[in-house]
Length: 555
Image (cartoon, rainbow, N blue to C red; front, side, top):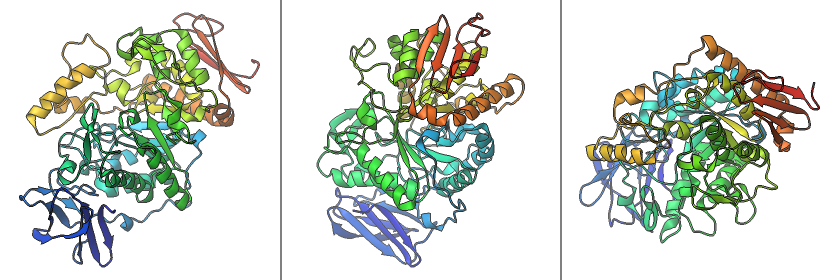
């Protein structure tokens, strides 16, 4: 079954799955045309006049008009008509780009709307040369799929194939990826297949895209394993593969795979991972799927039968261990962490929790990691969740002594896992990253604001910035400062990333040994060792909060 619009030089064919309707019409540039039933709930219509830019929508028997569930472009927002977009029209200039090796990935996570004052993909592309010079190798975009209004993290997207228009639309994403590849940078896109946003989500009016068999934090689960689930899975897998095939992305980050309800023998996560890799092989490219998961379950990255088949997984235990140790916070999931040994275990084995009892969860948590390799894990000192889910959106650098940051950067960059930097981290950004929305429904906006207060990581804060207030969004825009110690911190990251490239194979193939002497952490491998002082007093030949890299065996 096919979804969406197929564009040729002789016109366009429109296809939509709508088994909840006996008849369906295509509204094409103001004309209403009856569509042809094709069986199994699918309707289609060929139009020789429709070409790139043509506005269209689908009309139900009762007169309701809705955008295409597989729309590639929404020029006037999620509630209005879709527009035909020809993905093949773009002229790529990325000659010879084949991607990069998994162990060479250094992620730089950014939110398009707050990364620059303009808040567009074209404006963000102007910084690609700087990021390449810094030493990151993969720009990771937070979700760009269309959402209601102009301000959102992106996790309220409702149309999985399209690019939000205020970011520049789909052709701007193609330009961004093309420019990144010419700068020798890979691009990863965050995609959300565990739920759709609450506003502009019309999929359920077409077909059984959702099922009450599963409940999620967002309501009924997506129908990945019930009756008529085949076309639902095809819609999602088709969206995943189009990002690789038509937009030349190098990796997908699957949001919250632990919240994807699926009891199928072959999970949708596995189907997506296999499908995008197949497209990558056809294109002669190295393609990866990274999973966000709080399960601490090795199956997420295993390809053997029963495994979910992703390339790597976000492993938050490292962040939690470092954060709890240095800040002293013990609320929410930080209740499970706080000791030096937690940091050591994360560095030596990837997960801290590998089956032992978790006080936060009230049950055993995790699986052993023996046999897994360091590049199958992604570590971060902070990311959009860990910063933005705090009441005031404070970055970690604002919660600890600022002079401690270079040592933490050294532990992250020269640690075992693939490192992820959150935008601005590389120069010590102090502006917050807050949660912001622009829902048009006042009742929904209020519900979202109230709901956020129940989800926040740190408690005890009075007034939480209103997500709907434009000032909350504007306060989250980066400063891109280079003066004073901002430039110094950036220089430290650049030096560390240069070292990581030098020792890349050693880092990828060996889990390190981690040992403490007071507040000094030593991370040792066959070729080099890192010592980092995580205390305010000089110790073991290191100044307060200082760090040093030494050849194997010491200098």
